[in-house]
Image 1 (cartoon, one colour):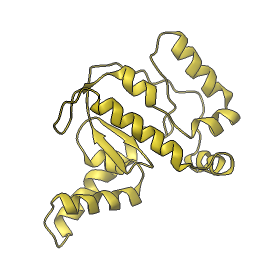
Image 2 (cartoon, rainbow, N blue to C red; image 1 turned 135 degrees about the vertical axis):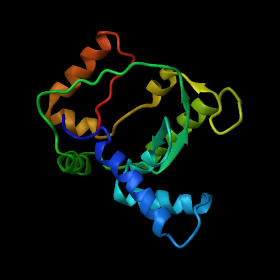
Image 3 (tube, one colour; image 1 turned 180 degrees about the vertical axis):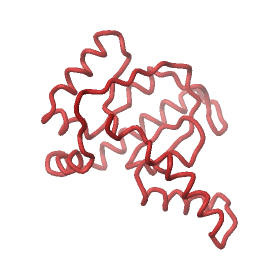
Image 4 (cartoon, rainbow, N blue to C red; image 1 turned 30 degrees about the vertical axis):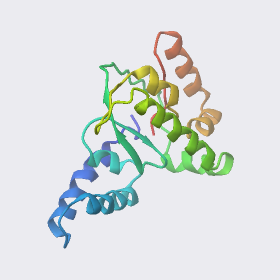
Length: 171
């Protein structure tokens, strides 16, 4: 399989955390955690996720995280017989899509609603159901990649027809 499942970032996060804790001239607290997250984001957009423990909703470019408890679920990873280079996917995205602040606001609003709807307080709130996650999950890189590799869209549609609650391209 190509990249996009966090292999390199899951390696980078503990190394970065160790180096930060070992060589930073400050004690690690909530303020320095923000500094560590900022540094991690510069290493890779999904590195901040791997600094945490467990499931989280992630949005923005990877800098916004909300830890969640999820109900149990199964995952199927399906790999087409080709890989897409990340640099190509981002290049296509930059040419065709661009970022809009409005979309980020809509996503964060949906995430806030999914987490807060039960009114339970605490670091996690309530257990989030997969159907709630599926309603808000998206990958902005899919559109330009599917334009060049329609097999991705065909595979996603087939997975949903076969009973998957949702399907999403990794990366």
